[in-house]
Image (cartoon, rainbow, N blue to C red; front, side, top):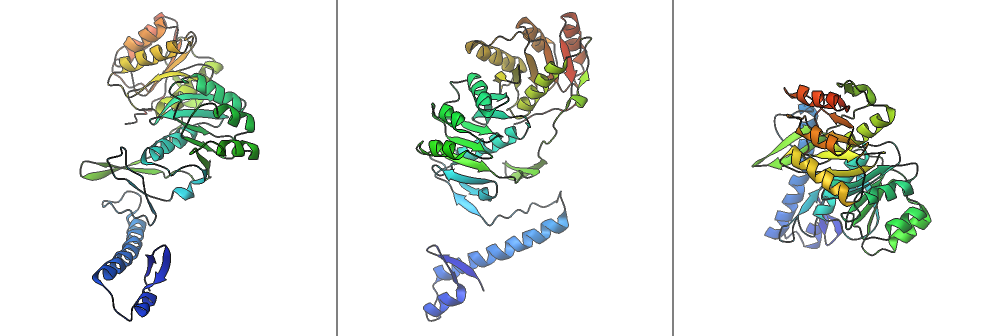
Length: 363
């Protein structure tokens, strides 16, 4: 028995035949065929995937749930989401989620999953423009917002802690598109719901898939999600001066941010707060200069800050620029044939540098 949707009501194939005295139109038969083959192909794909294993040599993916979007990346583009959004989130309020919302939500949860301390992040166009870890969600939000209160307008807010009323009151002072949290205090939720069109999401415990897909050219590329999270044990000091415990905390914080920012990227941080980042640049030097200029524009003192890079330094130019701004410690993956040049500069100028051995490009 094939089940088809008829104006929102699910009706069996046989019931439809009976109601039409056994007569079907070409349009009817086409709809029946679509539903029949959707069911059988989904089943066949599941069987193939089971036997093919984790890395198949043929691409077969099937989703039974879909959602047509208002439009795609731009209003002149059509868009549809294939997947089960409700398995990951409960939407408590707000307008329909758009194509760009989905991209930002994906970036937001990928970033917040990097942190176990109470953390608040603000994202714009898939990159963090503010992020901080503090004792409370309220303090985390204030520190995150101060990183770039201009870009925060219209952004995506995400935290790994329950949102209380005092935080809801504070975030309500500016316009933003989406807020994501594991829970909301009842009075905070009531306040947030008063903001027209604000998308309010509760993050469920379901984890993001371990495998990612992306369309490119006339096909699809598949890869493991970047789940590597460096710890203090992963850091290899390569300079005469080794970072103290507080600096190591900042280095790891910055490294988690750089991992989830678009390449080429440089992140500047201090006191577990994002001071500024340079993202999506064709030159690592340009990324650093962009970050420095942005930090200056919001009044941050870079003395004692740390710098994280998503890839190695082929030349010592970035560490030299960083030193001139008062940055005293660097984290990078290493692996350049000229690593020694950057290390020597750090030694000469009493900077510390650690190498992780893991590159975190994100394109």
